[in-house]
Length: 291
Ligand SMILES: [Zn+2]
Ligand SMILES: [Zn+2]
Image 1: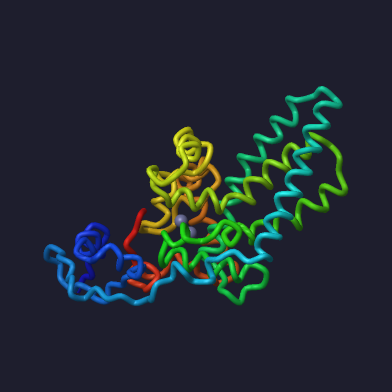
Image 2: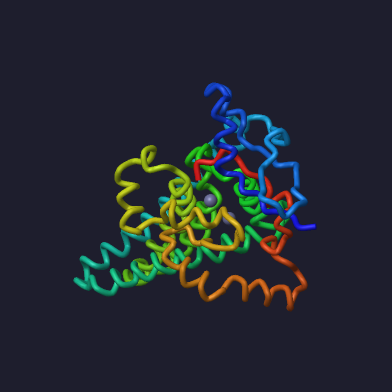
């Protein structure tokens, strides 16, 4: 017997049309509990839709704490110091081409780095993983209910990357003065620090986003909804990059991550989550999505 893949998006929207607007926020996540065991034309069984989670938009886990704000402030400060060293070095030497090219390289490589990191946390580890366990869990939660990322407060969403940025850039600020080097570091670190904000905007609609953000998305400087949305559609193993998304096409077409997953599996015997059966809970769950 064959199991027909669930195509739920439009059906869910029609179902929720009759629900009072004031109550919709509580229907953050729905789960299909049915599986269809026929090869005839698939018709979703609406009666099997159930609400599985209480409202999460007021969850304290989405709110910023003073610790989050301090880390984001520290990250921004270290990036600013690095950027200032690059600018002042440019004025001092009158050499601008090199730091500009270094900055461009930092921007391009940050997108690649975001993809590799995103792929790793989506596919390996769990909340007990040292250093990145919290972020792994956040990634898993994001895939269960993608649009809730837009409900996270600013510092709550950025603090994890801000910690990494601070711990990486602070020693570089203290140890090096080369303005070309800091041209690379400041741009790379800025993109890493704010990539989760770019990710949030990629889950927004143009009517909700500031015009400047929409303009940056439209010219491809930051990842757009169009470049990210495939990440949340089957087979769930594409478009991992969330700075500009410029690497997504080449990485997906070259099957870079699939090759990497095979290497990890052959060397360590660990399967990535993207190999999980399509009918697993991770894939079946969907939501009243803005994606
Ligand atoms: Zn992901
Ligand atoms: Zn996403």
